[in-house]
Image 1: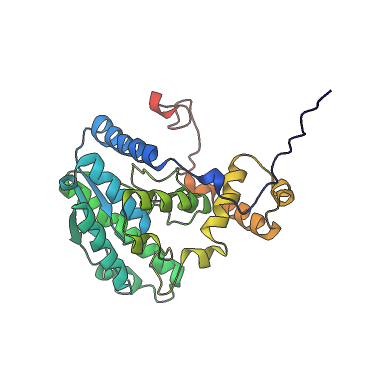
Image 2: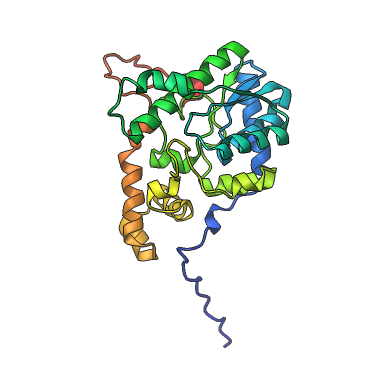
Length: 287
């Protein structure tokens, strides 16, 4: 009797990003539809404002907004601090040239230093948080002035790592990138036409001279995204180590994920009734 040859599953490769691949064309159409639905249909608005930092995340959002609302209805705001790099300003200008959106530059040094001059002991992290919150004050104020909605730019990896300033970067009510890992943001940005000089440069919050995201993390986005993918699927640390992921990297990513959970939620409110907002009182869209 002829027997079929035994088929073995290929060995798992912890260095593969196959599971993170996306259909860029479909994803673009979906995110454009999402922005149109959230901004125009649900909120009855036609314009949006976005902080354009010169980084890939804000560049991608600007490109998506231009498609969703029309470039003439999108307002990009550059908000440099005196230590911001010239490259950031130049790259933000490239985004404006490529998309045709409106642009305004508002220097935040005076506003941020108004407080920082009173906080001479502030370290780099505190100073960076003040700058981020100053930028968000401007973004929301400009949205009121222009009669439009502020749109966020934080990606999934940053959000899972807690790598943002609470009540700043993650504050805008609409965010098209919040469920895209950083490596997926890069892929979608290349597809949609974000200038390569922006996509290919080291990711940085540009709050401290010479700072990069991956230096702060102690791991690359590529490695972090592969581990996060499986952690969010319910795989344990020990299982990931068995699969071939370095134990130290798994521990680092898991610790980041667990210790920043609070940043991804609204303030914790003491429940005193059965109408507690966001606990019991929910609109249909909240379920």
